[in-house]
Length: 100
Image (cartoon, rainbow, N blue to C red; front, side, top):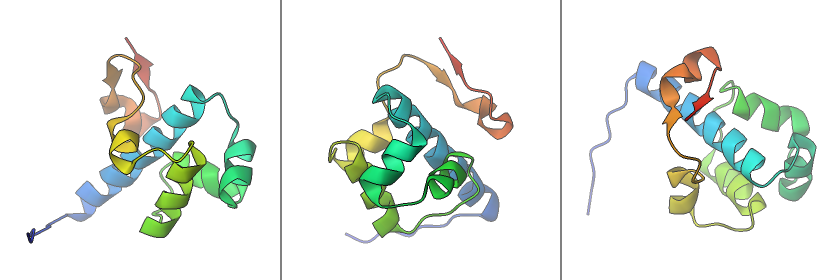
């Protein structure tokens, strides 16, 4: 099956922000520091920080390393996010995330 993927620059930026928030949420879910995730993945702590802030657009292979750092979870589980209740993703742009 083939898909036509069209993604504007704005959509791409929001996807990178969303990805950063997912990494942050999973890291908090597992109660690990950026340093611990860096150790598990072979990445630098500063790189993990940049990802969480939405400042870095990772390659797919890097994303797989990060997901594997969370106990080798499946990608669809990662993208579903941890079960934390309702999350207001509108606040992502301002780095303010509310849990309800």
